[in-house]
Amino acid sequence: MKISKDLFLAILSLDSYNRGYGVNVNGLDARGLIGNATIREAEDGEQDGWEAAGFYAIAYDVSGVKDEHGRPLFGDSGTVISYRGTNFNINWNPFTFLNSPVIKDAVSGWSVGAGLAGQQAALALDFYLAIAPDEVDPRSANILSTGHSLGGGLGGFVANVFRQQAVLFDHMPYTPLSSSLRAYFDAQRFFGGEGIWEFSDRGISALSTAEELLSPLRLLNNEDYTPLESYSEFSDPLKPVKLHSMSLLVTLLWARDFAGSAWHATGEELWNGFFDEALAISLPGISGRVGPGGSEQAVFQSAIAYSALPVGQGELPFGDTAIWSMFDDAADLGGVLAGSEPAFYDQMVYRTPSLFNPLSSVDAKQHLANLFVQYAGALAFYDVEQAEGARIAVEGGLVDARKGILSANEPDSALAIDL
Image (cartoon, rainbow, N blue to C red):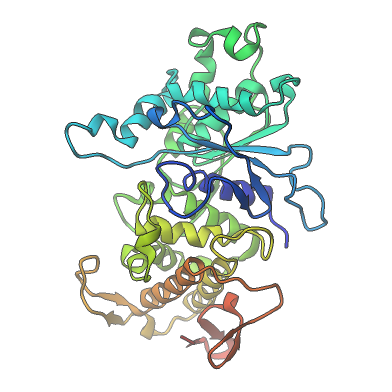
């Protein structure tokens, strides 16, 4: 199965949140494989000072990742560094508040976007130099950088300094610090005593969910990026924050490459379900996978996003069926909603009230979306894998898990539900 560079790098950007210390999702090792990419094990002392500064990054050997023709997907770039974004955890204890992960990121990392030399910028450069071969000029090391949000800003900064390639996601601006670097860093430490050479962002590209939180800052700094529409019209004062999600961006990139456009008509319902905390909490056992930086919702969304890895290739921590199922069902529902929608879909469905759903009712189309998003979350969380062209055995016969729970009857716009 083929996969684009952008999508694979988006998954690696997500992965940096879930390995090492302060993870969102428990249970993923800091070594081994992700898909066919090999996680580089950290050397002794290499990560000294990282947690104190709120910094984290992972290097991957991606030479084993192939395109549909069996050629290396990343060409000559055999190494990718993924820089982690912000950890929003807050310690509300007044004695430890200033040691909160989000405070560390704000002081040591967000300052990069303002042109100030936070400690994370130096650690990002140090890690790049640690990964680059000793005998090679760091500008010729063929190391590709990636990352989300703060991590995207760090990745862009490193790639700009060392004139390398980078693919960034929802990234924090990197040009302010790049332009003021001379005032802050010792040339001997980072530039081998040569003085500061000309930086270049020619190898940097960026993608972002349209209308997410950092879009205005990138525009202010004239940093180009390609927006991906979520087709979500929900009115929520926190909409820019919700859209600033690496899990969401992974799913949008997968949909761009594989899902067509039929699902667009149900974008609002799809993402309402995706961000519904009650759906995440309803999965038995999910709380056991919540890391110190995460939540049930983060596990739920991350699991679905990880299922975008190529079918049947390498290590698949959350299967390879969920995202296919979710968008297949969204397309079925979207096909009905885009046509002459029967009044039934606007009727209210009542459910047992809960802490997260005190109003206890949604319309029929949202209820259907909630069902298929919840089903996709279960496929991912329980690591359901299915070979290409095959079916999986369940009680009562064989099913194609990637086809989800909805099926559309095109002549009369009817939907069938198979639970």
